[in-house]
Amino acid sequence: MAIPRGYVPNHKFWDRMGRVTPNVEWSESHRPHFESFPAPWLPVQRYEIEIEAWYVVSAGKVVAEDRNGNLVPAGLRKAFNKAQGTTVLTYTADDVADSVMDLTTGAAVAAAGSYTEAEVTEALRERGLIRPDERAMDFVSKPIGIASYNYFKAPGSDWYNPRNLTSHNFRPQALTAVTCDYAITLPVLPAVETTETMDGDLVNLAGSIDWSGDLGTRTGGWFGSTAINGLVKYASDVAAGAEVVAYVFEKFPMAHVTAESPITASVAGLVKEKSSVTAISAAGDYFIDYDLGMLFVYEAGGDAIPSPWTTGATITYYHYEDEGTGSNTVTSFTCATGNLEYGDFLTYDENSNFVKAALDLANPEGYLADGSAVFTANTDPDYSGVDAVISHQLESAIDGHLFGIVGQIIGTTIFPKDYLGEVKTAFAGQTAANMRTPGSATGGRTDQLTYTNSAEKMIIVNLIFR
Image (cartoon, rainbow, N blue to C red; front, side, top):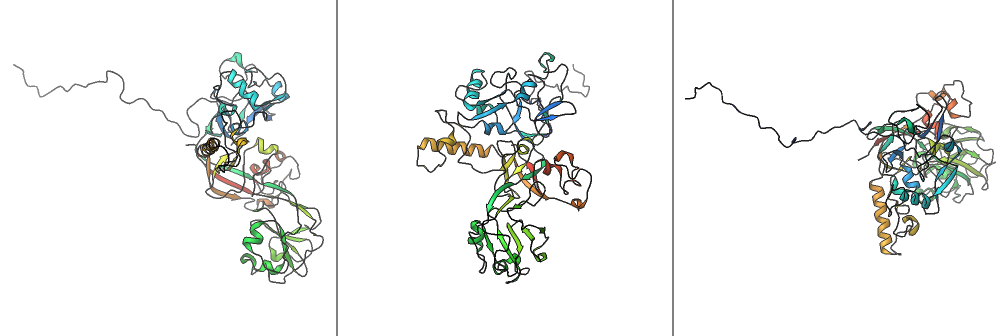
């Protein structure tokens, strides 16, 4: 007979086939939990003289991964998306000297030279890095984040085996980090409008300005004080008959005049810039409305093109209507470019910089079955060509738009701030941007602006990497 003891055993049933829920790890998005370093085949960009090593990716650049899982500038995906005979990869003597790996061979670069899209594609196929039906573009992924800091050249073909290091016992960095979803600041690089002829296509020195016509077409032209008075913004400042006329630029909004974004003319008419249109009082005085893209100058009657200005004069200035192109600073340092406003979504360009995201039907990523780039086959998708080609082009453009968005503008900052532009320190006259003290020797502007040849505008971007 069982003796009651006041205890009934309740046995635990254990998992006999494994855990019900697997272990799940997570990490902050500014340093995601994966081991990464820059691809050893990237051409060198800038030399760090202190530790005598090369950078291959600058801080803030949009980055992607190659098929080996190494970090590369995301813009290479667009740079490789070219016609077969177009040069897409170049190595220099610096790459030879520093034992950069040749992407087409997997060995050190033997001599300075360039490769076309077709040559890179064929080499990647033969090396087994892309499938036979893929192109060089497919070797680079969609963007995954931005470079958290400057990436040094890979010290060798891998980071772990000392036998594979380029220089014995030398690794300038450990593994590199990627920032995925944080907010960052970016300088906005303006475009340059070179030698715009002030021929007065819209000369209207006596009548009024038609905003949608005269100013809407933006073909450039001179307007008298009566027309200026018709603008709501200047109705109280410029009376009809006042001693001032205005030239309307073809491009706007304009970048502020700085050492990196000057305004110059073929005639000596820009003598003294004024802070307002009401301050104009003598020949040579001028005021610029950067938002409207208008140059105001003195003219005694307010109804003529004043000397020394003529319809044959030319003027050069910087503006945000178009995207900036081309200089070494655009390639090397990170920036944004174009007419960017609050809330705009951003994608990336060939330089791995930030540009406004748009459904770009003329330049989609991808190739057709015959190996020709989609954008060269039918740049005007008006359904006048082969439907299959048009469909492929539209699908490629939509895919690039959806998966190419990397951020959204949430703020704008205009420099100089807090009167820092009035402070003067040593090295203000230095030509090289890196020799000037940021702020007090750069017109009150941050070095993010001066290093990229930008003007006054910085944007704050909320990163979006899905």
